[in-house]
Length: 335
Image 1: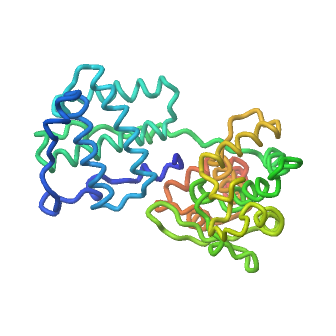
Image 2: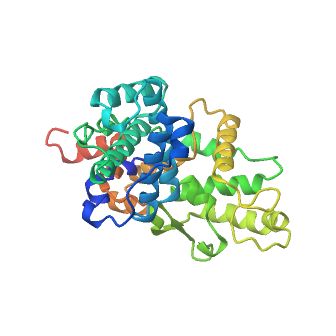
């Protein structure tokens, strides 16, 4: 969930004027208030906001889940400070909350998403008449602090993709790693892939990204070979005649979850002897950076990654130092 595309969310565009909101006024039951008054008063409004994002705005489940976790932590912070109403929150409190999250080791992208969630919540509460003033609307997004993403070099990629050897499900695991690097797919997209979205004859996969937007991404020869080996050797044994539609299956013949794929990648990173911290998203970053290194057009990489805003893709031009040097030498009069 952390590739930066959250940061393009514009709360003003996402949440329409109050005249267009067609749901009942927000209410919190007396029973809810009786248990833990402060927390329930806050969480009840948060849940109403999240319901609105699902029903009215159609946000993806993973996005709503991330916002729920962010706002839960914010509510816990407010409760610990003795704040029982969103109306009494000050900008200083929000900044203090984000500073604490940064001290806990949270990434800049995650902190920025925290602020986006809080801003959207306050916009919603203001339009609903639950607060008189939107006190967080003018806070700057920490996206300005965004760090350059971690990328594996070509030698590390080769070591990682070669890591599955004598494991019981080595063919499956190799196919997963090859697909992630070949397509730049998000881990959730890989987990949700079905057989009908994979065309090995032509060599492409159809990924459904955020907002259920479909994109077609080509497969390289090595990824095609790894997937062919998995589909012909291991998958029939895992499926056991159940005819599961999912591409990647676990030992029980069920769809392999995103958490399991994440752990699988971490295990092979360690086995490959890669000292740096790497995850499925690192493979996505590496895919984009290596594509640009070899001359791919930025707009093409944007399309393959499924980025709505090209500004999100542009960060990889900062990672690709060799490409920048080549361009400088070619076009600068004193290069």
